[in-house]
Structure formats: C-alpha cells, structure tokens
Length: 541
Image (cartoon, rainbow, N blue to C red):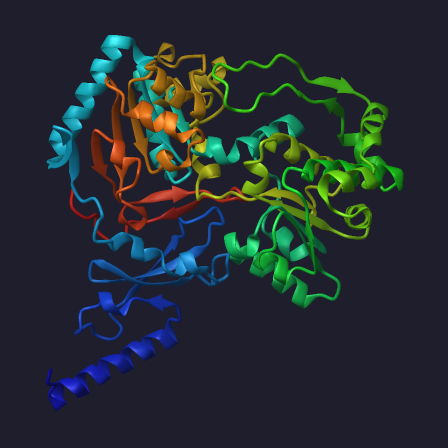
C-alpha cells in the first residue's frame, strides 16, 4: 500500500481534530464508524437517559450525520453527574450490529423467511383473531419487560386490557421484582422503595445485602466511595455469599452461606431489642406487628393457592419469635461469626449513625425473596432509620423501567395505569381515558408470568406476543416452556432487535426500533422518569 504526502498530512490533520474534539468533549467515541472525511466539530450532542440498567444515568450522545458515533456522561444529570459505567460508555454500539433485524421474518415450511412488514402484521392479526374466535379472549397474551419504554407498556396494557379485554399482560419484572414489590406491599401497604440517591451522599454506613454494586451498579457505588472519601467515618459493609470487587473496596466483607441471610436479619433484630436500641417513639407511632404467611410454595406448582393468612400480633409475640435467633444460633446457620452479627447490629442500632441498606437481585430472586425484603425492612423500622436523609432500605432495580413502566402503567395481570383491575374505580378511570366500555376491562386477573408460560404449555394460551425480553433464557424450568412454545397450535410473535433463543422459537419476528431511534420515557430505581428524543433514524422496516 502507498500513501501520498498530501493524504498523509490530511489524515494527520483529521487525527488532530479528533484529539481536540475528545479534549473538548471527553467521552468514548468509535472511530471505525466515522467516514474518513468527518470534519472537526461536526458531532452534535443531545441529552438522553441510559437504558442499560435501573440506575437511570444521563448521557450525551454524539450524532454525526444520521449515526450515533460517541457517548459521554451528562454532567448536569443529578443521577450520575457526568460519570458512566462501561455499559453507558459503549451503549450506542448496540444500534449497529451486523445481525440486527431490519425486516420482518415469518416461519414458512419450518424456516424463517424475510417478509414485508405489512404481510407479517396481517398474519399476526389473523392469528390473534383466530385464537380469540376459537378459545376466547384469554387465549391471547403479551409478555414484555422492564426494558419496555413507558409508552410501549402503556400501549400494550391499553391494547390487551382495554381493547381485547384480556388481562393476559405480564412482564419479566415479575421474575426480578416480584419479591421487592410484595415485600413493600406486605410491609408498608404500598409499592415502591422510599429511598433516593441523595441518601448515598448523607449516609454514614452502607450495608450491601448480597449484591455486587461495584460491578452491577458502579455509578452508585462510586458515589458511595466519594462519600467515604469526603468524610472521616463512613463505612461500607459488604454482606455477601462470595468475594467480589465490592468486597475489595468495602471496609469489611462478611461472607454468609447462601439463603441464610434470613437468619442474619432476624439475629440483628434480636440484638437491637436485647440492647434497647429500638426507637420506641417511632415504633409506637408508626409500626404494627404481623405474622406473615409461611406456606407459600416454591414457585413450581401449577395453580398454587395460599392456605394460610397473615395474622396481627403484638411486640411481645415478635420478641418471643426472635428468641431463637441469637447471634450464636444464627452463626451455626449462616457461617457468620456471632461477633460479626453483633457488629452489624451495633451499626444499625447506633442512633448517631445514618444507615442505608442496598440490595438487588440477590435478595429479590431469593427463594424466599419476600421474606428477606420484609426482614431488612424490620431492621430499619425497629430503629426508625427510614425515610430520612441517609436512612434508607433501598431495593435497586435491574432494568431501566421495571419501576417506570411495569409498576406505573400496569403491565402486570392485576394492574392498570392507576390502580388494579379488581377495583371498580380504577376500571372506570382507565375505561374513560381509553375510550372503551368499562365492561371491556375484566375485573379478574389471569396469569402471573410463570403461570402464563404454564398456560402456553397446557394450551390454555395459544398466542403469545413477546417484546423486548428473552424468556427462553430467563424462565425457570426452561425446557418445559421452550418445548411448550414449539407445540402444534401455538403461535409465537417476537419483537426484537437481534437473534436470541426466544426469536429461535418464533413464528413471526418483528424488527424493533431501539432507544434513541424513537421517542420514549424510562423510569429508574428512585422513581425518576426521564424522557428521550429520537436522535437517529430507525433502520430498515
């Protein structure tokens, strides 16, 4: 290969311009995407939320022509204050993979064949109508996720619940957040965590319950580290089942046997009561005591029904229950020394220390996830360390809109955009806004996520539209549901951007626009709603 002096000087000038742009606009850019004659200063920067986890960081995306070519953190966003993690810094790359779906595909003679979008949509409508005519409205379903933007989830709920009249609407947040939701509901009577990210700046102690924030929520972990660096006595305690990068950065790492965090939490409450660290004024004014359900199944039984009920008890009954959970007894169960359990108890019990507890999927996908959520709330309620700056039990969300879409606009079988299907007032409100008869909205929930896939396997549901999620990887007892989706008489529609094991079982694949290719809204862990504009064109159809 030969190069002329003129071209060499020209390429050096372009490189210098790129370096200057990087200095002015620090971030990550992807030079291999740029045309060689990209003039300096041609990148236009626009604000958008990141959509790769539930933190909700603000990004600035650089667009040149019709392509996103660079990204950096938004310094004016109160969530991340200009910082990004590796996912944010590489986020725009997902738009441009070579194997991206850009047209519809229809299974013909066992093979997926590229098909005009109108033909594919007509087939979807035909199959949906045939299922309803044959088996009734509850034979069709839609399964989405916390990756749905808020308008996407709202449209899905309106279409299926308001138009078709079935409550067969679910989302994968049922798998990751059901324990967090049920933990909130059974403890507080309302859903959603009460903490916010400013608690990170105000807390004296952070206790991470079975989660690796340094790698999974690195921007929030960085805020914790910044707080510790700016003050003299801030501590990070990593309560974990294995050593991680969070363990390395923590002041103390405590490793427990998997599932035994239940015993640890009860032992902490035992010590708080024993040492008179209970905030009596707060408990008297705001706390009642209840015995929860214990016969709650294991999530694998079709048609499971609860046989026991929650009972109201008094403080003395609760104290008696905790008598079995001494630190020494908990040590035998958890592998954590009684000394370390007492240390944790003293941190929570110290009235001069503000304590924030963080957890995510380690607790929320626990086989007893609701219970462990309840028990950590118990610690904060006993000490009154809740809903004040720096004092927060905080369940972190994994997906960008597990809060903002699923909980807020009703993409679960029992939910509506405001209230639940069981409540007449909520049905009336939705019917009025949607412009449909109230009778269209069924007052009875149908299937939660796992039961919906069981119903697909059984044949009670024979049409399922799956959007922005990959259940043929994420579902428990997966082989049953993969085989069920392939049975005769089942019709699976998948809206996706890339091939997945779920698109492998589809009868129709519909290409999707992603993130900054369209306008939308996302929520985040602290219930912040963020808007994004369309910044680049949608590819293909």
